Length: 551
Image (cartoon, rainbow, N blue to C red; front, side, top):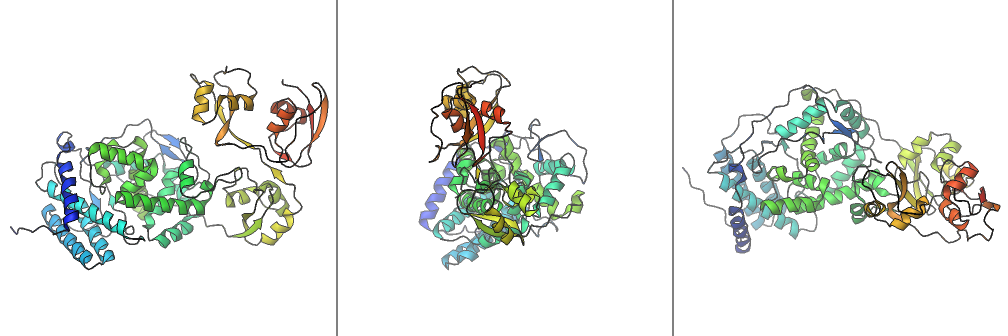
């Protein structure tokens, strides 16, 4: 047999590789203690299993996943290689070493693009190797994967721009966990999947254009299908918001504005650009797309903790850490791959997918007054849902009181500007609230910690005189955006005596909470006396208020 001389690498990189290999050799061999499960093949149509729905697509939170061995080799099918005869693992390893040597030669020539292309080729060949737990080739495969990961990380660190380090196809790994998600989409989640696919048409052209600008795989455009079902206002139990499901802190981190009027996590275009920045960062950090997608779902810190706990020193195999990830994250990548398989070949998986909705053509007009979209729609002769859908980032379905680029259906721009000057100004509540239903075991202190506020703030919002609450009680709680100070010009405390009935004219900057406080009464009492169905007020509106009334 031909003996291959291992590729030469710079001494500094070699010392790093040796130290990492030493750490790997001391790690426990999970593959020897866990038997390899038999592969499962997804048929075209499989009988349904009961699930629990969330975000439009089912969430089988009650069903426990089949736990894979941490070091099980995944069966990868790189694009264009699905057919043909399978190669012997030893031959694949030789080809991978050859590709690695060519990458090293390209690096010597300072041809970074060529080096990355060859590293990607070597990586793809390794993914095609299916080895038993006792194979003598496992260590060589492990060593080469580590060297490839180091080269990619080194190149990424030395470049000021990304290009072929992040583009290319995401390997479509078909294993039993992917098959389970295909099965779910074929059966109990079928209708939701098809509706999400139909909805994707409104945003797909925009997402693909943004991905192409950065040279990223176009397959990433399907992440919103499993994140939010392509719903710009989707809100998860973890309070992740928007089509790309950003939590508040990550939204701030990537430049998404969040204030009293606007939450750009719900803006499809701005959230797409932020998601792309985040995914580029994650790919640079972990070196492969499957692990980056997992980290997108649960955060990079969670994936790094699993990697450290398993003493995995290379970041190119998501399936090496799959078993120890949180349940939802462990499902996230198989669901994404299942989505790619179905949209790539619907007929193979028993689907006739609907025609995607077309994107809505719109004009953009600059407005600087706070007006309700419903009022504007009525004056324009439009369905209010049209303006709401085009401006989904508006928290109160009203424009802010500062310059804002409002999207209106194509051809309505001039009419919109003419209407706005005659419309009443909308004043949103200064205290942005959520609603919390008291559960067994809840206390005001625990609720305050959950919503990052204080017990006193909750008591003020709900007119509570003690800390006693009851199960089933609905409490208004400050949203995690916090409570804003009353704006300048808000009403001053009244000089009227308790029991007097006064007429109050709403001024710019007023809100019900502040008015009630200044008249020593409650929001509920004012709403009842004036037959108000919501907290919305208009400048010039007259309110009848009984001073000092608290019940």
